[in-house]
Length: 263
Image 1: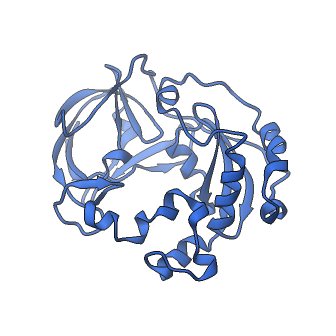
Image 2: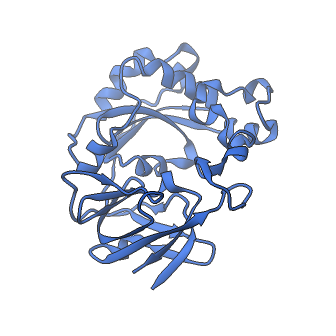
């Protein structure tokens, strides 16, 4: 069968294992069903996720112009501590910024390659952890806005990592950690403004990914350099396809690419 559409990050459903879905305008594909099967990915072109024009993708699925104009790509998205909607200050679109920033946010610990701290909207738990390929995670703080989550993350980054080593994550070279102990150890470093929002009595969440075979030596598929690829799918972790020949493909980093997938 052939599927065609604009790549966006895979939708997920919690389960044992996690279920992954590619959603196109006219097609819907449960990727788990492709495990151990040969599939091809063919690059067709570009379509900006915002303006829908056939323009080269710059970052995050957006063309150059949209990336520097729309609120979905503003600096506070990647750096929550820069959020200003709680002060009524607009960066690009105050209505949008208030709608997103003035919602409950979670500061969490996730273990995908090592223990790291991160921020997400409460509604994105556990989706955010799945997207990062974390096999275990725990909430530390639940705050009423993105700014408080951001300054908490910044404070904790002095004592725990904030980046995922994607190579280690994909090779599954990871160790289990006691995230409850990590949570309690880091409590003292939470800023005073966020101390009252510390979560004391929770347990870590464990996640199971649909992987039949982990790669040993990674090869990254770049569709602009290799527009036609074929391989046997052996796993899905984070937002990556893992193929039998050790090729890995990051769906999220290719958002806005128009592709055909043949199974």
